[in-house]
Image (tube, rainbow, N blue to C red):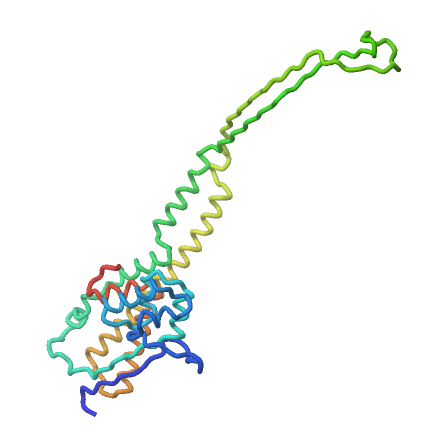
Length: 290
């Protein structure tokens, strides 16, 4: 096998295929075939084909997170789609790469770790400015009064009667038969409106709402540390693998396949934490997310 032998493999994106599942090639499937997958409508299928045409190829389902696809659709794509990869033996090491700066400069077109961290924080909705806004709002909300409105409407009816016996005389006998004759009738209406402003001044010091916000803010800070720590680890592991492939290229086909699969895995994991923004920027050759 020569040094520049090309190997083509079909990689299942997630899980083994069932006997009744016909796997689709993610980079070859038509819009109609993609729309047949549960959770993907015609618009979603067209968006996938459009993104694939824009980038030339898709490396994983996680790149599709930049599209308005549901988690259900992405999950079905992982179990139903495969991607074909091409692995080429690396050329000899460039003699001009004499320093760490020379090596790292080969990846200047890719996003920086700080940009990837920002994308992951935005995607997870854990930006620190959001936490600051929460705390500020929770400390000032009690300065605003509660507005209470009360409206009352009352209708009054009044009727007066005189009572007479059968000959029209004023009744004297309590046991007799009397006929009521209306004397007067009155009708009136009363409307009343009240407006109240209620201040909870005791909550200006420390309210239960502020305590709840502080607890949630602390949880978000912990989550942010975990997300940023994981995306940072993945980023530099991927960069180390890139540098190793550049400085110590392998000629063994199996080793090349393992390297390529690991690079795809790391890229997909970063995309999962950044909503696909990482691959979008890499595909554009810039650090600008979509």
